[in-house]
Length: 186
Image (cartoon, rainbow, N blue to C red; front, side, top):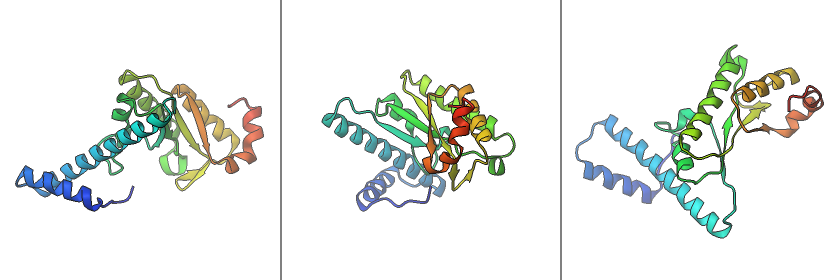
């Protein structure tokens, strides 16, 4: 999520596109740069998909994504909806790094909505692939405080009807694992 520079080849391609477009305002230039980056990353996904499936046709490809808010006009340029539509992905794992300290007391509702929206985006593509989420036990965004909180997060994900969970990370989950299992949260 940091500003990026294009490699020399891509920068030359972008400048050629700008020249062909004629006089542009700074806002138009920024918009074209964003669209260019999104198009390049989608092209890279197509190349990755083609090359890997050529080597191993039954390979399952997945990505981790921050969620639906980065599909367009975001500096991450990760248009995973298009990637799902085109069959480049077999699963998507959505960030579940929401915590009351950073996201407010309604963080579980926000998480549920984020996951539900991600599921509906995949459904709208006409393809059926699993949508999972990453439960951040301890991350740079925050951390869970108890096994009970893990259970509450898992219940929000269940209400959103996601297909699975990945814990980040196992080492941080281990102190609460017995409680989480005993509570039937998994």
